[in-house]
Length: 335
Image 1 (cartoon, rainbow, N blue to C red):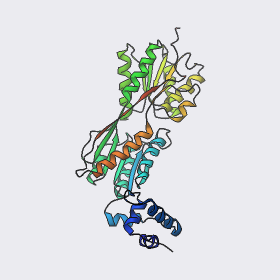
Image 2 (cartoon, rainbow, N blue to C red; image 1 turned 90 degrees about the vertical axis):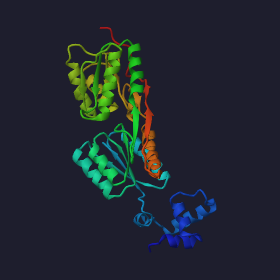
Image 3 (cartoon, helix red, strand yellow; image 1 turned 30 degrees about the vertical axis):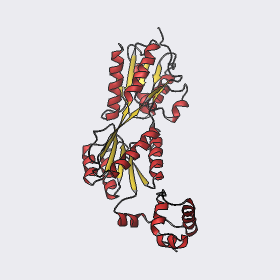
Image 4 (cartoon, rainbow, N blue to C red; image 1 turned 180 degrees about the vertical axis):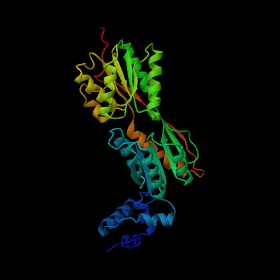
């Protein structure tokens, strides 16, 4: 038998409104004893919320979207966890979608979000353009981006301040006596990768090091390994390689080891992201920490705040990064 909210309310001796508030964790003015009694009846009747009925009754969706580039990339699971936990704590559901860096797939995802009538969506990928933004905001769907655009109506933006961690990393390398650096940036056409590459190159140049070569790579271990081969063929080897992500750095370390180059005795390596595997690399990876779980949590809270405002005005948020020293960096070799 399928039970309704009224059945739960009747069995628990409360109003349907009280049941709704308990199920949506809006229990500020509900006695703990009442809350427990309602939840006991919910378990007893094996009752499930009718999301579609709630949407028709209130005019609001209980669903938020989260768009990432590549769910297989270890950067994103913590972003998802932070976003999902914050949403669930407020009684909302999350639809996670994966672009795989494909423009066609991204357009399909935007259509799905509009068709699903999500209340808001966090787009934690650079593989999206202004057209997608307009489609979502025209449907009055709140959007929060990372490193994409300025805040506007129905639009918030979280800026990850990579420059802070990068400056700390370069200071560390200079103090170790390094004077020849190479850079393996992220993919061409990726806005975040371009921002990181610019911060690395300009920071190194300010310290008297013109990085050579500066190459690009996909955010994959095999791509990082392939990019190192160009560096190994250069007339003069660098003493340090800065990488646009930890996956690229781990690929670079693998290729260096295969070529008989020791890390960090011959070449130091620095990554970005501080993914969980960074501590498992051998030697453990020196990197720049991006607080990914906090990024996901902030993205949801930014959406929730924006949608509660009468004019749905977006806001700007900032996330700091921090340099983490491990065993992949050492004093520069002298020969």
